Image (cartoon, rainbow, N blue to C red; front, side, top):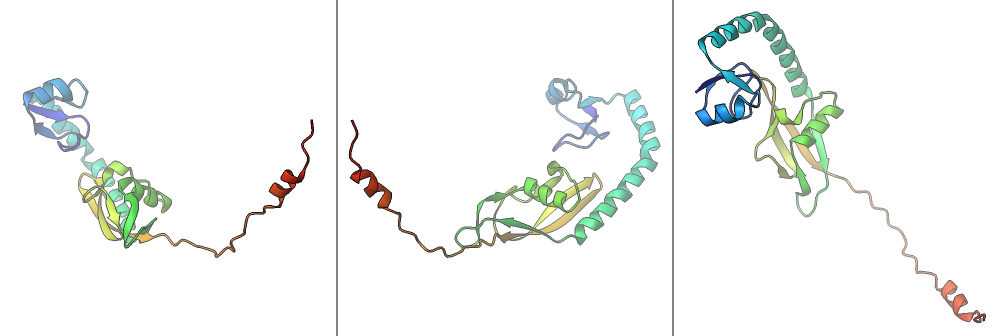
Length: 175
């Protein structure tokens, strides 16, 4: 069954793509959810006309995505995480953490557009994430995970005061 996607569908295609799916998937999920329409000859003609009209706007969006890509590649992002023995992290670093660091740097990118190989990182080191800014613009973004520096101050160990307990024991009981 050929359908035209009305929205981006993960692992299937992008908005306005004509894709072939199994009949049940199209009829029972994509079309009722409003994610797609049937790819009839008239719908394909309407789509072609809309794509021609959007070509100029699309070029401008691609140029903006390329500018953002250059700005991202100029960044040197270091994610600070707590580290245990060796270089193992307490917990893990994922696409949400990368998105938060990019937001601190002034680039608001949704975490669903950031893909890390293996989905989570559990060790310190240098890694790459694929950031999809547009269907035609994907950036291989390098970042580094570094250990958190813990400041420890040597405090003298104080012995607990035992005087108040003795004073309580010396007081006579009142009736």
